[in-house]
Amino acid sequence: NAGVMQNPRHLVRRRGQEARLRCSPMKGHSHVYWYRQLPEEGLKFMVYLQKENIIDESGMPKERFSAEFPKEGPSILRIQQVVRGDSAAYFCASSATPVVMNTEAFFGQGTRLTVV
Amino acid sequence: SQKIEQNSEALNIQEGKTATLTCNYTNYSPAYLQWYRQDPGRGPVFLLLIRENEKEKRKERLKVTFDTTLKQSLFHITASQPADSATYLCALSSFSGAGSYQLTFGKGTKLSVIP
Image (cartoon, rainbow over all chains, first blue to last red; front, top):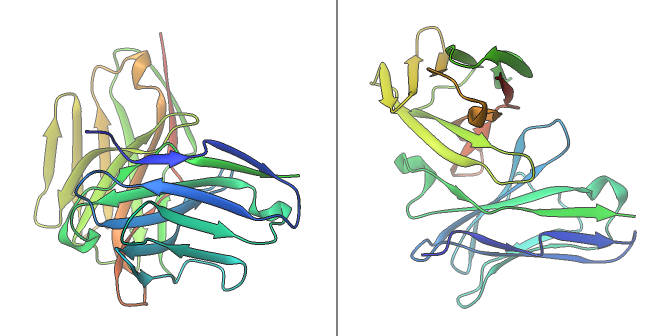
């Protein structure tokens, strides 16, 4: 049973390009969360999705960022027109039930985005 | 405002001793608190969950306490080993204000166990 899979592990983009980060949750998990981690900072919640639905995107910047979790395939975090400040590690986590139900989250290894 | 504070950014300890990490929170009323381990370049790995009605929880060399009056959790590693060196994160559930509960993380404490 594979864990949460994220790809790519490392992504380099020039300013103004688009970045697409993929996350395949653990088998049987329908709840997906995206977090951003800046150097020397904690994990910051961005967005919570269930299959085909965005449940909570309160932590995501209003512009340039979007997320989806289609019926088939991985969850995608998309950053348009990247800027240097977007450079960070982006982690995806999945759970079998919502966090409110006292469940642990399983994290992927992250995608390290570098904007040059 | 809501805050989660972990006692120090870095903690050095001699092998074999007990490491104690602290997590304090303000303006939260979490139903539970979790501890994760994160190694450099890797994602966090779940270690323990403790509920608000539990005072203490143990798993092998790990022990977690949860004091909702003090708004504090202590994380202990007994008989520490160099392999325990990592960053330890505490996380608690909080209402995001947008209709769902999310895990909110502290910045972590980097533990170094010296042989």
